[in-house]
Image 1 (cartoon, rainbow, N blue to C red):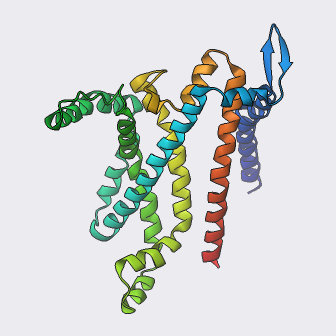
Image 2 (cartoon, rainbow, N blue to C red; image 1 turned 30 degrees about the horizontal axis):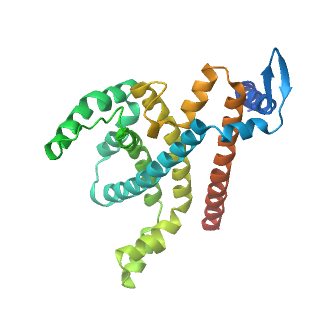
Image 3 (cartoon, rainbow, N blue to C red; image 1 turned 90 degrees about the vertical axis):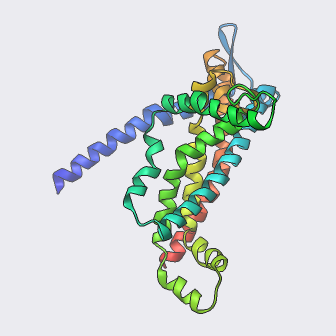
Length: 283
């Protein structure tokens, strides 16, 4: 037991050291970079002027707006679809093979997904659209690229979130539904008064994961469109990467910390709400 504790302590120290070296130290160091800028071989302190210049940058405002618009159009539908699919699988489909199928998209490499949606599937969509309209449509470089990216996101992550909701629904006691049925409760009343309150911690957790997964879609967009995609899918990650390549480190640091602050405002209430609800039901 003593040896195992020592081994675990060493492993924990190595893991935390890696986090400190590759995440915490750069994060703290970047704070100074957000308030300074190199000029004529020296360093000139600008205070909050970097942040002012950043918010006056039209490209940054566009990237920030697109990021949150995409997140909104991605997180809400994927949670609704995942919840519905989980209910269908739990009540109608008694096949464990189905559970393996729904998470299959996560195992497909990003380059393959981009090839499928950027070439093969896009041609089929264009053919279908042309049947009803003579207006040419470009799902990769045109204004409709936004919906192609949303489709990629839903196809890729819906199965994963469905598994989480399925686990949550399986944890709800059947006795509560039986008692509600005896009282004459409708299906919608059971959902809103029993199901949703019982799985609220899972809902908060799924929303957090959906937001984080929405940021990962940058890889798919980058493979499809490169450094400069259409305006409506130019995300904050594009802005940070392009300025990093140009060594505009003041923009990179400021954009990263602004984005981190906004995420903290969103994530902290969800985490607190999920923990409070979970502790309430544990009691």
